[in-house]
Image 1: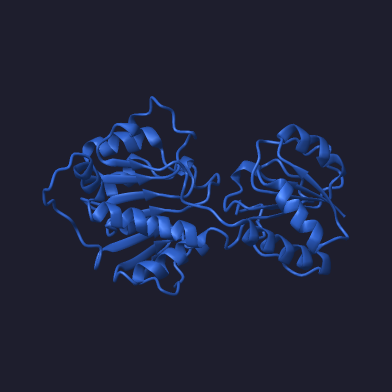
Image 2: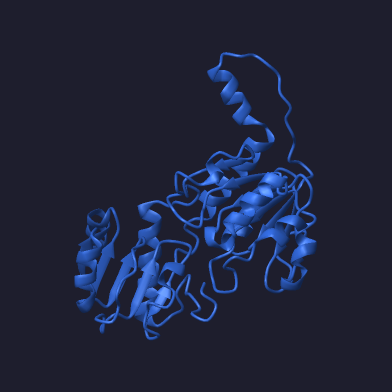
Length: 308
């Protein structure tokens, strides 16, 4: 089998893959143009992410394994015959630690502390506690469940919103698709983790922000296009949500002229929440490769109809 490895550390990953599976023909690529050329002869693509590709020449391609949690960049590009799997379980620890870290930094007003340190100014400032606060998770997949587990250690109350209101372990209450506004009205911290699909694109706009609890904080960690950014900016100016902790945006990198940079109630990180080790990514691929070769189910298989 011929496998293309596309990653910024493609050479290192390819060498490890050849060592683990000497029966494979492994091609390393770090350039989109080279990747496009090599697709014609590949049966498997193992990639961290890439620009839009033309798969029309990839007649032999049977399976694509990406390391990202989201696969919206592949929407509508792969032939129906190609199996797609995503980075299942690779990002839950990183994103959940980022999420709780951002929430704690906000509640403890660490921005003020760092500013005062730079000014050599000793002055007490107000802080909040997250114990007893309601953490609302819009999205209850692997990452949402990981955040819920860690948040319970801080004695937070956990709610969730998903398509169907079935119970989820560690979540105090799950709201269904038609209960969005009830869900929004109870959360002190609203964490948006939804994948980008035709159904979720632009799902959060002026009406949803207005439905949020007064004083609530928005934490956006899923896909930026789920939020209508101009309406978020207008809502932040009105103070509802009261603050936004943003890691993902409709356009990335976030343009320098975006008003989000200068709003005092916004904290920005550059799509920095996720992440996984090369070892974890390679282990997932090898596990799925063994399953694929023996006809067993693969981890993280994407349902084309749902988009995740």
